Length: 271
Ligand SMILES: O=C(O)CCC(=O)C(=O)O
Image (tube, rainbow, N blue to C red; front, side, top):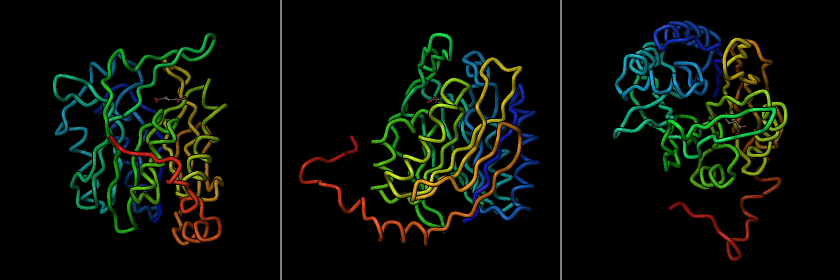
């Protein structure tokens, strides 16, 4: 399976971002992608005021436009994320469209990013968002995939559950920043891939020094051995990588970590 991560420099409005995303999806398809991933908050700036202003229902023109492109190009697309208006609340949510343009999965970010590093990053997603309760997988011709959003990656229980539920790759629309990005981004993607012997693909926005939240960029693919398969720098671009699932079987056969778990001593359960 060839994955394409669309590291776009986010524009002010959903309409402008949709036009750019359409062009990048065409380019990803031309580069042979089977599945494309968009960054966290790919429709608007990563700002609480923008989340309120652009909160959209599931059938909004922005999401419908991406679904139509997925069908027209015959490409699986992880459209994530957007501020989703539902039940009188706003969620940070990602949607997956299959190669016919049908929605086959949705994930409401489970862990909200509330952070206060003096002299570094401050952000309170809980000022705007309600947390989801999702553990999200979906099936494709290449096997089962898991889906998380950004800060979700920091909670190993969630990726372990996804792996135990059969995910062979975990796709992560994300947007680390200039404080946590250099410290934790690559390590988190390598560790979650290594712990669970799966592929991870993290798609970030390109860095924009004019924006109120400066993204780290560095969209990345890591493999079941914990190695980096491919990684971008901070600039806009498309990262493509082949996920070789034979490699996953090989690593799991040689170093059977998941089989060696002591479920007689401890366990992890979905509630
Ligand atoms: O975990 C981090 O350091 C960044 C998380 C984040 O930016 C987010 O969840 O939106």
